[in-house]
Image 1 (spheres, one colour):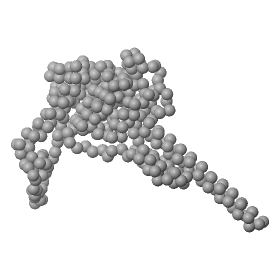
Image 2 (cartoon, one colour):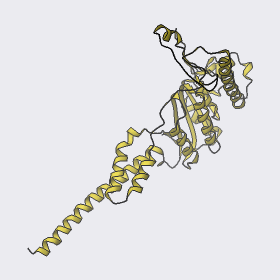
Image 3 (cartoon, helix red, strand yellow):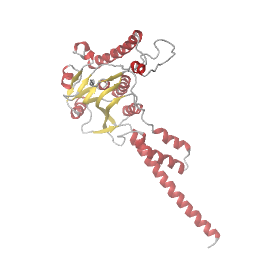
Image 4 (cartoon, rainbow, N blue to C red):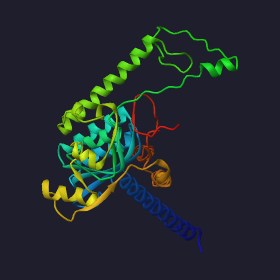
Length: 320
């Protein structure tokens, strides 16, 4: 075998190897793209659907969740939105952000909320964004109110001989603080803050439910209601579950019957980290360059870290 023949065979073998690895890398890229699309656009393969979004646990201002609601609002495949709510509440601003995002969806699509075991406080704020609210007879709902809590550890620090020193620009800076008793001025500022948010919450109930909040016993004091009590006070519209919620969409909003309920949810980075790695490796292997790798990276964002700080609209039985 001549040297020229060997060189030709070597080049052919090299091309086959390169072709194999490029094909494998391209396949990995397709898998990564599919995983990313599924992660951030659940239901994209369904031609017509009712999007179902579950609101549970502690409500905070979750940017991934808010982006998802924007995509639902823009999707031509989604005919309606069903909110499945089971939460004791969360931050007041988190409930406000969800309310506003859902009302944006409601500009183009009917929205119905179905309350589960509990839908109280910030979760009730979320439900108020719906055009129709369905709850179980024994659902715990209401708890219309705002709370601001902080510990005071001055007695504990004194016991251990620890003293906090501070220099601040004004007597209302960092008030209230766990390291000093709250002053009358500081308490007044905090009370005004809570009262302002409570006024907003009550105004939301009046605007969305068409009720006089003062006429409902205990509502302005933050009491909870069963689903049956809430219905009697017009805080919800119907007793039932998901079937009743879908039936309302079909009969009152002319949503096509027998549409699939497709769950939409933002995903965490850990769930698709492998796909992201494969996609980045694929881009480099087939010579697509850093720009494509960066594009794959930016499509996938980790969910915002949960933080419960500031004004809270949450219901939880007190412990003694």
